Length: 244
Image (cartoon, rainbow, N blue to C red):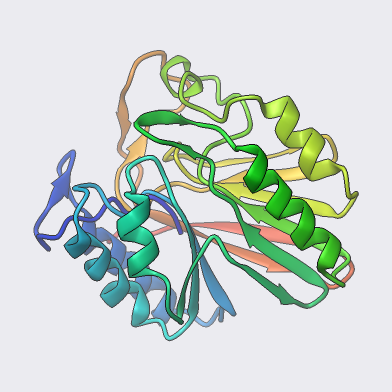
């Protein structure tokens, strides 16, 4: 799940959507279904109002799932507040987990006081070391900013900087099979440099695809089911939650 944009006030709304209510609807949809996750990956913009209280709302809502929750920051997050909020299990900040012959790792793609993204050398080095130290044959990378062109002029101005460097670094080991991102409030699924790149819509409002200027879409909240197989295959299913 990604981009819940929560407020400390439970009634806080973003572009006409009460974000805690829409996140709660997404969570309830998952709980009502028969698909069982092993953990949650939350790819940024957990909050909107830069408050510690908004992170508490996130922890209460998502903690009800009784799953580990692996989080990376987005441009609306406040790193210092977020680190403190999600530093103890079942919450994790830019951490890693190994399961079923996969290493899943979160990296920080944020640039302070800038909506666009960038990954510094220390973060790439941390990624390289984690891959080298892991016995897993396959890797999934989680980040906030899209390393792809979305075909939307305003969104593409705040995507991940230096995408060629990104693909060079994550591709060096030959183990990265999948990278997932948030930020764009719309769906994306394509292959670049032999790596599947997947973006997921927000749990609140969506952005209009391929729009030159900022515009919102009327599509409902969403989340994505991802399945990772020991042989390196992965499958995804996008779930739109119409009544959230």
